[in-house]
Image 1 (spheres, one colour):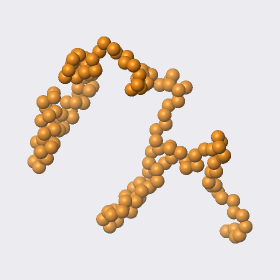
Image 2 (cartoon, rainbow, N blue to C red; image 1 turned 135 degrees about the vertical axis):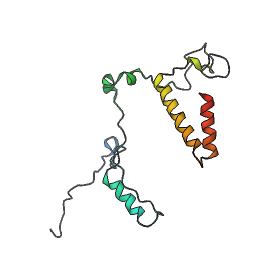
Image 3 (cartoon, rainbow, N blue to C red; image 1 turned 60 degrees about the vertical axis):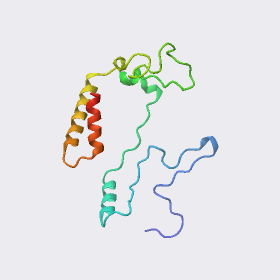
Image 4 (cartoon, rainbow, N blue to C red; image 1 turned 180 degrees about the horizontal axis):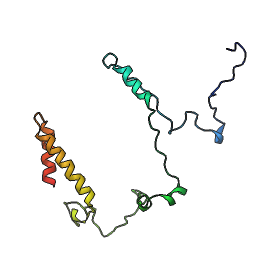
Length: 153
């Protein structure tokens, strides 16, 4: 083991450049998250929880596709339009703002797109809520939610 004198670090910390050449030195938003310790847990569970976090590193934030890679993106991504700013003039001047809902002027919910996949998912969720609401000890809020879903279907 070397003693004294200059010790070149094996992994030096990055240093940011001045002004326009500056860059993030904290590994940026895509860096892996560190393990967190939660205080106040029963004896041994805090360390167990921290150990579980260090077994597999947490996923970094997903990368946003660049404009050059959109040409190779799936058709659904290409079909998405950029959001319209709130200050922009209306793109549908002859359509009431209540179109698509059951209240007010304009066409009702029947004009809204509703595919078979969404219908199947809605039905399975409704069945799940009905089963949970019929279990002994189910909360009144859960029972009310199950009734509400039953009425909407």
